[in-house]
Length: 429
Image 1: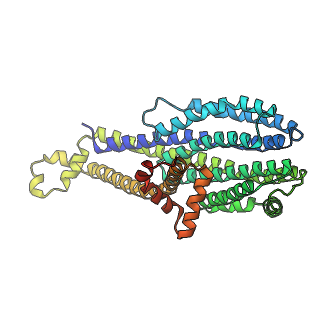
Image 2: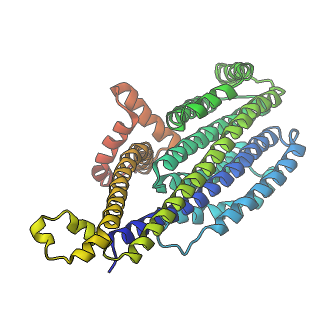
Image 3: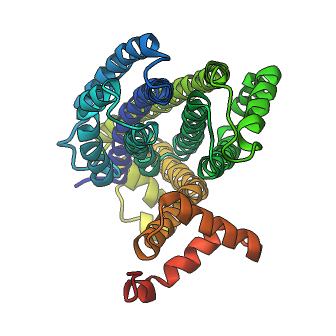
């Protein structure tokens, strides 16, 4: 018959399995981050190439494609290392579904690059294709964060996801500005999109700072070069404050691209630091769990040698009248070690219970940030389907409503979703 300690050992083995899976998932997230960075740069370069009708950045594009191919192979290798046969993997259904969706997008990259090289796409269409692929890759990161069961690891994954999402908005801003300057003109729609991207990235970085901890937050602030930020802000004003239709200096496309790239590279250094911290945290937690497992297994072996010890300790606390029925030799031989072992097992059970409760409370706090994003995304999808809006327009509608009513964005999203039943019966035609 299995003892209580047997189940404690089994619980710890499950925890170690989960930590091992988290370590593999965290390595995948880091590899995806490097691919996203290379794709973001290729997107910006491609925009300059297309907007300038092939006159700018042709050589840079070829070199960047080579870098992307290397990063892509690393991601494919990381996908191959995931255990798709593991039935206990946390969040496995959604995580694997995201990967299944993103692989065809990676397979389509050669054709996308051919069409860009042949000038068969506009800068806007090329940007949309890259944005779609990067969004798919970031969705894999989101599912990894959502599936984490350890609160410390989950907190770091949440910080990493929001930082990567903010960096993606910054990358889209680089591509947007590159196309505007390289083409020599801007328009009202692009200016509005530009402002939306600025606001979106700042919102993501706020969440990152909230979950990353003081050290990473300070590193992020220190990485922001004041002269570079001032130059970027100047160029933003040149393009966004000018009346629509006013010509822009095409030579500023290089200045804008280089300025944004300095900031993006600084962000990538933070991304790498996040990945390193995540790996070290997984290793530390796994090492502690394995050491604890070893101690529990040693105690279990001791209980096996003295099979009546724990029971004797239990009986040792019984009233004298009940103990009289136990042979004195048995009590004398087993009670001291029995009391010690029983106390150890009970302490382990209590410690495990308190630790799980604390983990559950903290994990609920971390999950709240992810759940808010899910609600906003669902509300946007509902508006897009029934109001024939783009994602950007749906987000703006939610944001404007929140500002006018003095409510949080997630509260407005919840209100929209509460009307889902009525919207589904009355789609816009």
